[in-house]
Amino acid sequence: MNQAIDEPGKAIGIRGRLGEYCYSSGALRPLQQLRAWWKKDLRILAYHRVLTLDDPGAFDFDLELVSTSAEMFREQMTMVKQRFRPMRMGDVIAALDSGKRLPADAVVVTFDDGYDDNYRVAFPILRELGVPATFFVSTGHIDSGQPFAYDWLVYMLLHTAAAHLVLPELRMDAPVPADRAGRRELAGEVLLRMKGLDDSEQLLLIGRMERDWNMPRAEAPAYCRPMSWSQVREMHAAGFEIGSHGVHHKMLAKLSPEELQLELRESKATLERELDQPATLLSYPVGGDRAFNDSVVRATKDAGYRMACSYVCGTNPYPLSNRYALRRLPVEREMGLGWFASMLTLPGLMSYPTTSRAVESGQGPACSS
Ligand SMILES: [Zn+2]
Image 1 (cartoon, helix red, strand yellow):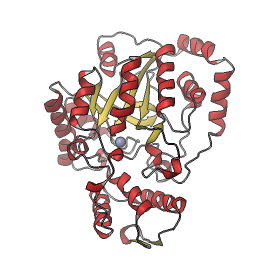
Image 2 (cartoon, helix red, strand yellow):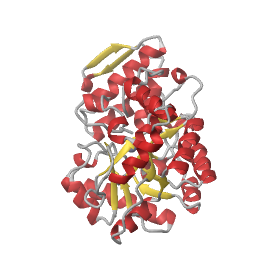
Image 3 (cartoon, protein in one colour):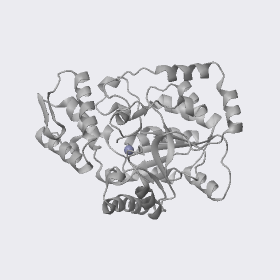
Image 4 (cartoon, rainbow, N blue to C red):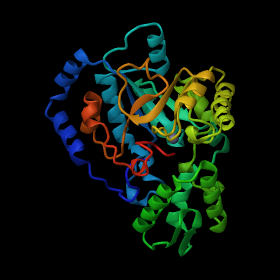
């Protein structure tokens, strides 16, 4: 998650305006050609959800996980196809391992978490355009069919009939605002403070809210659920790569060695059982620079993964040297096509600013669901 949760209509800022200007002025093409001459870095795009929201303020879940609309996604992928060299992550690894250089404009498209809109919205567009992509899924969530806990927390706070929110473990005792914007702001505050708890404490807290407010996750609307295994299998059969995002979306650096092994190896075994093919790709849940460390990287390698993506913003000039900590370029909802194109052409200048809720809480630019 990035940025504040209480801003359904976000300003694009100076980067966005500059990006749109570079695009509309026609400067990007020559800049791309010039850059390709002296810099050959692997660019990996990071998406979460692709959804068209007619009224973002009316959305019942975490807006920060909506990366773009269906219409803008189609435009972005068309541009990737026309101006860059979209590649499968497996082909990138094979090229690197055999000592081949990557094309100057290599771009990999990735998705984290495994929301069902990845199947319903993104997959048909990618298939039609012939753009490959990698979907990192949390296998426990696919198994359960339940919405993610953080999403459900936002939903509960937007809809609860309770007048008061009391969360002693977060030192919170506050009235629940009557208006939606106030409730969204309160949800943002709860999510921010929850980052101080470990995973099991977070799940206990959300489970207690479900019981106290009689809002069980099992009754969640369909559009906030993860993909099903049959959907994942269909995408895999169509040539798309499926990677692990852990079992339960836990921050791996915080786990005991036993729990770490379980998250890495159980998710891998589940993917291999469901897809009948070795699972070699991983994206660290949350993914900021505190979400993984040397022990996590070692365990990832030992478990048989051949690469791992972080959620640290940037590109990869020497991907062999950081193949277990690959940087990515997050795509955010307020990005127009011009900003998107400028980010791919000039990633150092135009990638997303890192003033996020995650950064404020000291976790680096990171997704949290
Ligand atoms: Zn995630």
